[in-house]
Length: 344
Ligand SMILES: [Zn+2]
Image (cartoon, rainbow, N blue to C red; front, side, top):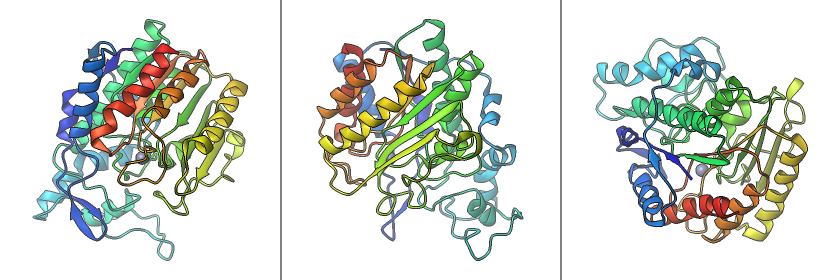
């Protein structure tokens, strides 16, 4: 399987994440991809390609223009104020003060355009986020042009928590959603996004919630216990034209593969019923048992079965990298999924 990847992901290298009341080194760090790239090479998965020049205007099909502009300028506006640390939001338009006015001062803007406080904006972060979009688009283009069965977009930073106008959960641009839009541009009528990251992809869900041409399904830690806490319940089924095209499988702490697989098999049934022209897998491997910020109990070899089952669908499949924070095993778990798919 071919992989698209760019060294420029390293521009996203924040020093701080707000976690447990402390500022810690972010769980989402550049070394994650070193382990994945090493494993691709060791096991000979296939070629690793640099992204093509792509027209980034497609981002505007998923994200609002004012949000894109905010991201473009946030770091400069922040440093201009003389703040010493990285840009972390501290105030939000919460339930008791939900004015629609967008503040002028950067501190207010950070709150307006973020969904959570863990994700620092640092120098180079947004440049890396643009590069992740290039990686995703290049992978879609090659998959379609060469009529491949599967391809891997090794994106970083991840994307599934980013909504049309909010960042957070380590995500700025929604790579999977933008990839789905690219599939449409290239002629696909129906796309299915299956999100197997441990966390609910609130961003992807909200982007396509009222659409019937992109089905979003997610298997994740129950938001009553897990980030992003305020979305991802099973009664969220889509709205308007999108009613019936959104499907959530929240699962409790300690969930083992056997139970996870029942939910996965249900989502496979939904894929078969929907008959998409393309499949996008939001591939997080943080359902792994040793992940430091998750609570499922999947083992490394379970990821082989996941890949194998996906290959049986015989639908052109784009794998987009999302989370996975057990850094030592992230390479093995990711490539197990992709090799399982390749070997069908
Ligand atoms: Zn995750």
